[in-house]
Length: 428
Image 1: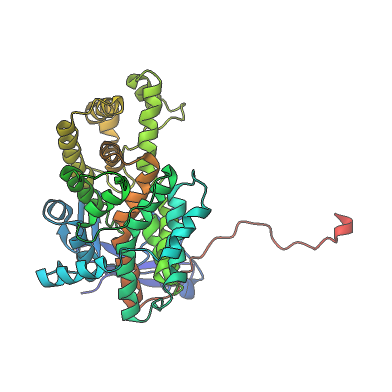
Image 2: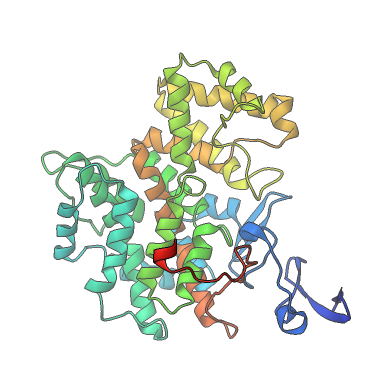
């Protein structure tokens, strides 16, 4: 039996249907609210607003649950490689051997960039942020690959998906090579996705490059745990831009720009900058913990707590274990790692942090792992974008297949001036 709620506004009584998801989540369907009552809802930042119905990712912040297409993130991170998870998110099911082989083959056939696109990098300053280059080059793909841009053509969409997944590591690695003045390294298609990226990042033409399998394992795990996270800022951006029927390249470029913000994908970069700040101040962890506790002090410990997770972040649990293994294996004597470990101990034991649930989150540990692998700080958010790409694609694709698709157009409550008499320029 369907449920409903009643809303009384003056003489108008509106029956509001209650929508229930497969995990017993409930929502009030207010789609008829303005038409029936003249009212809209106001929800700054969309904290309590559901913008869509989605079958891609389930997230329960109170219980610390994250699932892709019904599969627990812990199982996927333990058993899958990133390309397999890409297939799962985009197409809805784990692939068979044959399906996975075909998917890998399709990606391998698109790893190279059009040679003229390499010229783009000559126009960027050497110190340009790699996220600026990433978003620019992804957007420019719509000019180089005009043969498959129609969002309504399934074949066009399929080609765009393969091109994006295949080329994003190449675009990202070229951004890094540009920043350090080294020659670009072409992709090598007999390598795995993560092996290929690490080679393009760190190899040079004048000497052989050995790929560390522990780095490959850590990177694969990081990409998987970042692959989707429900209706976050960048995913909502991709869906909003895509709702106008903008092509997939343009929509993903918009998602990259949204992810760049320090409150979103830039948070792991902010973590390392914070650790560096503490290290430069004689590594005085206690001082900065006290500053974080002081309400009058504007200092914030980056990488602690989460807007959605109120118990623990399941991704952080996975990454912490990988982080501990990697640091122990490498036996790194880096003061930043020691500071990170001290902060972690404080957050897990200090009553101030425990009572406020300010536990180390996914950004805290991912920043430490990226540094251990040798990824430079400005590239952290680029790696986040590589991981989040299949989630963006899956949501864009789901939106376009929905019978309820419409262009996104939020309302507002106007708080400006009432009508005013116009004053000629000579009288102002």
